[in-house]
Length: 280
Ligand code: NAP
Image 1 (cartoon, rainbow, N blue to C red):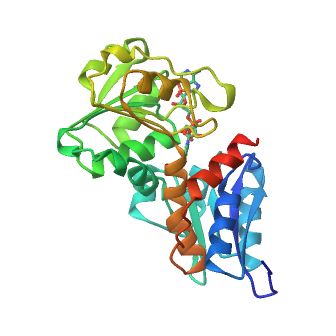
Image 2: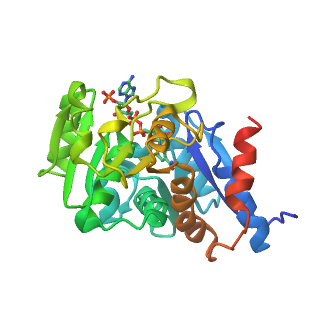
Image 3: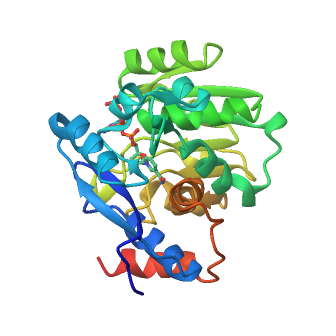
């Protein structure tokens, strides 16, 4: 692939950003589409976020994806934002235009795309979401938009769960962390939006025998792909979905926003990304 002086540049910014799969994913699509383009990692400290974003915009960059810990700052800093980003309170996509910096949140679309193969009837879905951080906010918002019949939020820090409910889901049940297993029997979609299970963190251990057969488990974590949470769900015979398809799903609208082209079809995309993860 050649990159000319007229190449379209975009990237991902975070602190750290070295773990991100997005540059590899985007570069696969750039090559498949035959674009004169680049997608680069931009490690940026929180105190430098505003200066770095302004500099990238001034330097002709098309935009950036935003990962931890900048998602809230990205929303606050933008000149304009989508109603979704405002509702969630965080942005993972900044696009730079002549009118200024626009913030959006594509994690919602990514999560719902990842759930598609499970063919859930949302009108009969009773969702239990573990977590109350940035990812949980997007996932809870997504579940409300598709009209789940019941929503419960369980987080170690109860105040944070109450804040999430107040901002986004006032009708949600708040489950104390110590009662997490008790909430399983009333739920048929179990979502891990905590960082438990991520990169050697303690696992989210649940009593999966309490979950009804036919239920679905989704883990937002994708490093590693096979968390203790998903192993427990699979051991119970449930449909177990990892976070990789959410990552791919949130990247699709970003690619289109940066490069102005539809995402090309890449037949073995998921397997290529899994091989990258396995080689780490
Ligand atoms: P965050 O804002 O830092 O929130 C972390 C969450 O994990 C909080 O709810 C926190 O609970 C909980 N937690 C952390 N350590 C815990 C522990 N020892 N015991 C119980 N709960 C604990 O992070 P985030 O942005 O929401 O990200 C959460 C996860 O989503 C991460 O694993 C991230 O990789 C993943 N994610 C995936 C995608 C994707 O595309 N697949 C996209 C975004 C995020 P407290 O409030 O009690 O501290």
